[in-house]
Image (tube, rainbow, N blue to C red; front, side, top):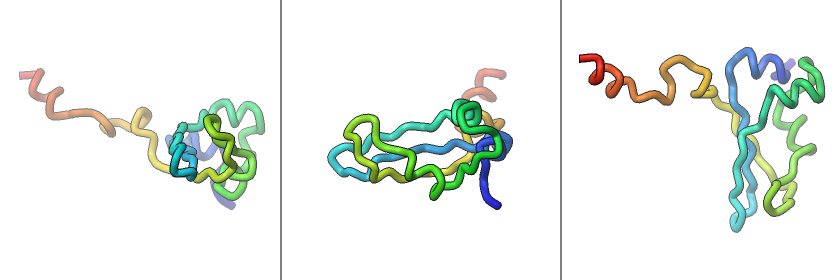
Length: 90
């Protein structure tokens, strides 16, 4: 079946779009909650479903790629400096 917007949200994933135009290089993390609201929770969220709908906000190119990764803002301990937190607790 593949990812839907709701399953990406439930899995605490982040989807980042990036422009393949070397002179541009713009990146943006997609707002999955807004996409779910606009297209529905069961709308497909796979790369081949999303790429035809995307274009770079900066240069207008449709040569856009996607990166799927765990969202460090939503995952416990990811992206945090746990050493400094432990050091402060002494």
